[in-house]
Length: 320
Image 1 (tube, rainbow, N blue to C red):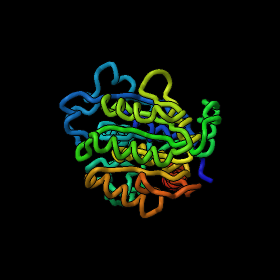
Image 2 (cartoon, rainbow, N blue to C red; image 1 turned 120 degrees about the vertical axis):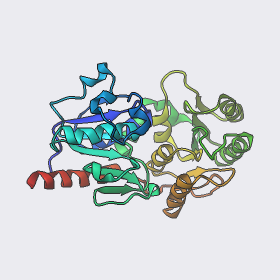
Image 3 (spheres, rainbow, N blue to C red; image 1 turned 30 degrees about the vertical axis):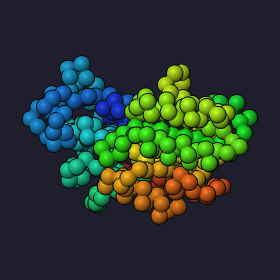
C-alpha cells in the first residue's frame, strides 16, 4: 500500500464547509495537516483562481509569512479562494508539493495535480476524481464518537428523527410552505418517537422559531446556536434523517450515516442541486420526506476511496 504523505497543508478561506472537506481528506490520507486560513485581498479575490500579477501579494502581509517554504508534501484546498493558492503553490514548490483542489475551480483543472469534484459539477479531465457527494469524515468510528458525546439520547423514544436545517440560497426559499412541509413530515415520521433538530448559521430566525414551536410536543432537543452543537450525536443516534434540500455537504453527511434520509422542496431546485438530488435518489439514498422506507441503507462514504486513489497517484509520480 502506498505510504501516506509526511506533511500536509489544508488551505482554508475560513468557510467551515470547505475546511471540513479538506480536513476530512487529509485525515483519510493518514497525515496530520497544518490548517492555514488565508483570505485573499482585492483584486485577487475577485478573479480567483485566475492569475493576476503579484502572486503572494494576494495575501495580507501578516499572512504572507505562513505561505512560504518549506513546502509540504501535499496541499489541499477547497473553494475558489483556496484554489488560487494551491495553484500558486504548485509552481512555487517546482512541483514538489502535490496540490489537490476540492470542488470545480471553474478553470482548466490542469493547473492542479488533482481536482476532486462532485458529479453534478460536470467536470472532466485526466486528473479529475469524481464523487457523488461532498467529502466528509463520517464513518462508524465518527458516529460512535457522536453517540458517546451525548449518551443521554439513548433513552429517547424511537424512532429518533434527526432534523437538519440549512438556509436559503438562490432558487430555494425558506418560507412558510417549506416549514409546514417539514413539520408535517417530521410529525408523521416521528410518531411515538423523538425529534433531534439542529439549525445552521444560515437558518432564518423566524423559520427556526416556527419549527421549534412545532417540535416542542416531541421529546428530544432543538439546537439553535447556544453551547456545543450536538450535530455528531444527532447523526449517531438517528433512526431517520429529515434535511432541508439546500446543502450538498449536509445531505452528503446525512447519507453517510446508513439510515433513511428524506427531504422536501416547494418547487423545482436549481440545476446543480437538482442533479445532486437526482443522483442520490437514483442510488436509493434520498426520498421525499413522506417516504416510508425504514431500516439501514448503504452509506455514502467516498472520502477513503478518494484518498486511496490520491496515494496511488502520488506514489506513481514519486516513482517517475
